[in-house]
Image 1 (cartoon, rainbow, N blue to C red):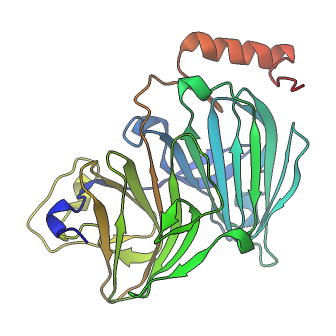
Image 2 (tube, rainbow, N blue to C red; image 1 turned 180 degrees about the vertical axis):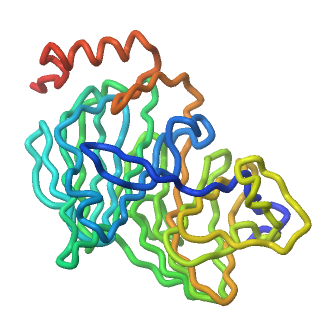
Length: 307
């Protein structure tokens, strides 16, 4: 392992904020339109965990996507889905839906929760580069049993959806932005170190407990989150609902815990560094491409036939 001088430092930290999406789903948004291009190639991360069915039952009825990939990860409960390619079924506890909209797909996702009315899940949007915006749509449904679970010598538990840990690869491969997507649990009083690819953007989203995501445990002033401002107070660990964005320089990240355990999503990808034209569920490179997409949707030519 390289010395700590090469570890990535935290660039910014902020908290997810309540919002309403779909037909009236109450959720928390970790990042979205206003954070672009900080997290390039990622566009949006929604946290739709709730114990109240009224928060999510309205769901996300039929709507179009073009130019992006949507990744739905369910921790508990069921999400009923269907799309214009003929796929339908449930995304259940521990499952992942990795959908590449490409040239155009129309789909719906309707959260149903579990027997106790709880719904725990996340949706991540990843951008596609200009030369792949109009690729053929692709759907991948990954069941819980297909996702490798690795135990590290330091006690961490890693679920590898996409990417690689110590030679073990996740089931989602051959993705344009070369992403990693892992679900990491770390017990109290432990440390987790992960090598990252040079120049890739990387972020963590805390979904339970708390931890320090900067190996130096630099104190962040949480009254100035998002401004990367430090004070001389005691270091403050990041807790549930915190989005941690790392700087691009460095070979690895290190996460440490004290008296509490932590669980977080760890995501990285290759920045596209391309212009973004975004309206609703469609993300292209120019306004002209956006207008064309919505015109085709209104005319009924949005979904392309595949011979």
